[in-house]
Length: 429
Image (cartoon, rainbow, N blue to C red; front, side):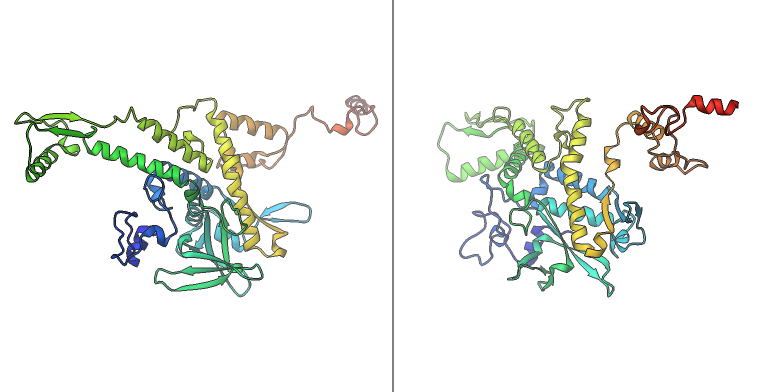
């Protein structure tokens, strides 16, 4: 299970309160932001990879991308010398990475890929230990939590990975035994965390969400002041404040009748949310987070500029501009880390992108008809894409009768292929 930073901090005796609210020189515990090298945003919100998931736009983007990557079939092919490819279901990577495979005895390939992709989207890095048998084949993939993993560069330029277990014990492995999926990187070794790169924007989204929650927790009204004509002592002020909040504070106290005595008056203060552009701020931050991850705003529920005619194009842009980048990243890293130089020349791991570009029913039917009429697909291949069983005679490829090779254009009858008239004449004779 994925542990949050808060649970890890609690088990380590670390104070998770933000700076200024719980830290003092007398307190021997260290604030969380100092332990994990995370500085609070200008709003005062502590933005970490775990706390950022409380923002619905971040959650939606991570869920959408990780889900799309993990459910796209990851196929293993073996290429022959003439370029023909066949499915390599007997290869060990097929058992580990295909949708029906298991990355390790406790995790399916789907869950493994979704977990790794989620970590790469939050931390910018995802790690997995590769368990290798005596024949050099990978038998299992064990994910490592990014917040417990350190990357070490040796003097000769090789990489080592140090992992700290929940018990506090740590061990190191050479880079040849670790699968490392990186996001955008600047130093060639480590991916950058999108959460830390966009800390201020995500912090503003968290602050706006907290502001809205506190606003509605106060009956959806701005602050109020009770004015008394006389002078009240300290105990009287406390009793008056406590008695008013006990009756009127919170959603349960909404719309209760207030009774003012001894000439007291009630004054509202503060700025209403519409004047502070609260809703616009939340919407803009959601669009900014979707832009950070390359997810079209309509996919996270922002439909202001979405129309029936442009949503299809935005979906294709999401596949080509966002998902294809991650697909290529996975494919290149798998080839580099999981295949030997000899195997990499004949075995390739590829995502089946064709299913992501499927349009509506009419467009699919028209595309299948064009492929069928031009001999690109046969009937059984089309039926396979539709999830139907093959039929007898469905392996035959057909083309239109009036189609001919380009090189035969302009030939005189009798040259190259026989003309129809010559054929008819021969048949008549």
